[in-house]
Image (tube, rainbow, N blue to C red; front, side, top):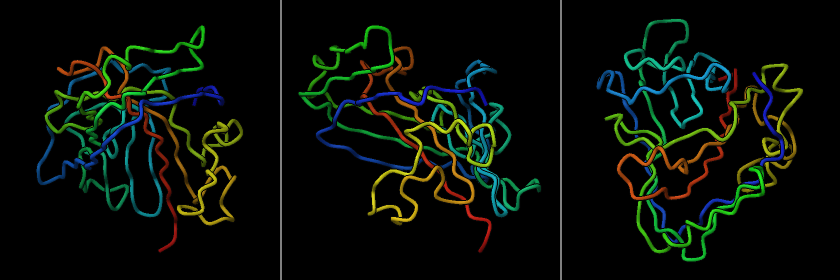
Length: 220
């Protein structure tokens, strides 16, 4: 995997109200259309959750258990792995909310430490962010990082500082806090809905940044 910055500083637009849903397309539903995106071979869009007997493809637009090569007809969730048994064709987050009146999106790593004040004029607006849309026509996700895999020696030796297990005892055992991985295989990535070219009919983005960590154990 190519190296990515380990000091990305992101503050997403805060929300007055948020609704979350997980959209899953199963094998019974079969393949569905997806807006095809050009795959940049240098963008780190490929990844896999590959542990125990489960194989789940990832991309860094926010799709979970998809074919990481971008196929719209090949499943992305296989069990047992190594077999043709496809159970998931795609899943991911769908978020709706109200843009906070005090919301400002700041991206410290862009030239000039850009502060995007356009979020201020959207204060109070209700909108949504689809990182997975079974129709393939209303997807808003875009990458902010590569997909980092703790079982990849190159990734592990260059592990981003933001990808270490966070200091949150409500989610993680204290013994895991500060480690690179919380399981036998962690993957970590950032993505968001803030690309103005991926509004899919919305007047503007919602301003959601997703920090995604997957964890896999090889024992029952």
